[in-house]
Length: 393
Image (cartoon, helix red, strand yellow):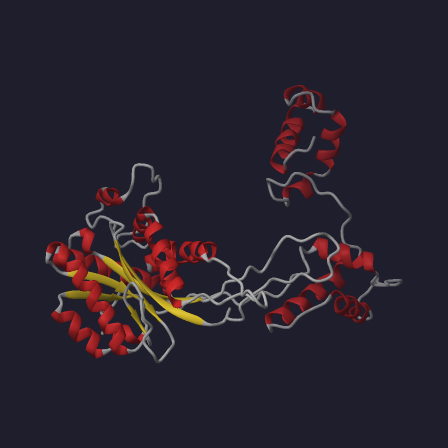
């Protein structure tokens, strides 16, 4: 059995007061030899973490050398440089010449493994740079929540009219990066159309109660395609963005003929003077999310975009040419049909949960009214602070 440091120290303190045999009977007949060992190790146990189970393994044979080596590795990594195991061993030989009690040090492979284990080091593959939050992100988050809260208090919006719109890029071809293959295969290939980097944009809009507005597709082309079933544009310009926003606002206002608030990111099209002027005419209040914080404050980014892209990849049907057997690129008609099907199949509960997580649909007075938009099966309720940023000017 192994025991935590806290348990060992408790046994030691009891043994010091009542004796080793009494401590053995008191604590489930622990061996007196263990109790004697723990009493000798008392000073070392007091500096260990209380939940540590054991201190196995040899201690460092060259502590001064390893301390300098860890410091050197930290400096290299702070500057963004890569460090290999061979470089560590070569540097250790150089440092050993300046340290005492390092006679016979060879910087072997075994020493390198023990050194890495002592200091929690691993060989890692380079990863992509993760998105960093902007400076003063906590302050901007609270300002945005306060802004939304004040808007809702001022205009008393109907919750079913609070919306969010966002553009998300999609590819004509989404091949898998991994596949099943027999062991020993020298070449593992996955067929593609050659258009895995050809992109188009889809603008999605949804409401707090889970209502999904018709998506708008933006293709990079000069001609107007025929037989497209729902709204699309050929380029994402100020005019196309204006048409999309106005269309979404009108569809919302047809429900109750009242003011419509929309939260959107800081994309340049959303902040154009013509957009602001038109939304004032349509009684649409636009709340601009601070730059770099869409992953925290935009419902579509939080809960919708990734599941939709995954479902779209599964929806794609692969077709091949009869002559050469090459994979065909999906037609615009196929793409629009797939997007329409995936968007219709998306669960409204996902959308409602996204608004709650972003603190947009939470009750303004701090009550439990925000549960109105959650299904009985949804156990997660928003514990985040009350709902919305600075003026969009």
